[in-house]
Length: 321
Image 1 (cartoon, rainbow, N blue to C red):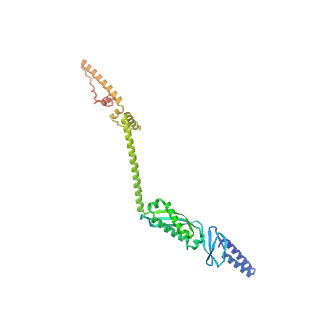
Image 2 (cartoon, rainbow, N blue to C red):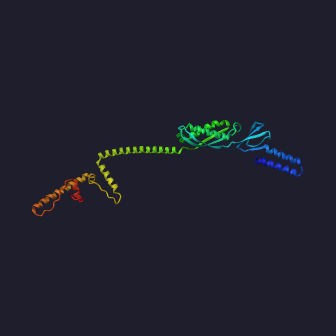
Image 3 (cartoon, rainbow, N blue to C red):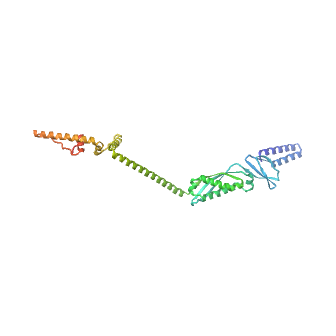
């Protein structure tokens, strides 16, 4: 009983009690009877509700929203339909996909009643019916789908489910607004296998990228080698730059082959070596003249045989062999 009907019934009952207190039994019984009739005939439907009314077993109509009257005993409200959007959760456990993989799928459906007369008269329990239809349609969709498409393309699966369920429930006065798959659970062993497969694919892609980088670096090295072969000075500058970059840190000891030092500036090294050679020859001639005039013989430095020995003797870093 709604609040308006309850208020009217309470008022009529109170007035009848007042007449009974004053001794007017007839008026009291009249008001009490009116209260009983109002309680059974005055109905109120909220703005989201529809009342399906039968008169003597036949459809009288759909009432609501607002206040309306029915004839007690003859008229009867057989269903109160809620036209707001409702949600129903459903699932499919251990359903096999097209590639025979067992999965557990959870989904939710959003729907509402668009025809209260059909929802009340065409089916016994429309809420239970839409839940069963949704579960059956979900299993059919899983059986016709591959696991990869089910995991990667859920929007297509949602649209297919919405269309399938909507076609089956339209004749019951129900409209399916949307279907959303919330979770797709696969066996743990299959999860491990898919993880290993994904890792292998990533390693394969990394190796391909590394191979491409190595090929590009090799081609750059070939181009640099051609430039250095045509321009020896560029190679010398590069070697000097490498030595400079290496000696930036303090407390670092670097051993550099003498041949590498010679290769950095061969022209200067050759001029230096020739000058040292001429000075040695001149010194030998002077010593020869001195031997003829005196009996004291000074030690004669042996003549270097190579340019490297001349450089060493000139610098004084290493003793002459």
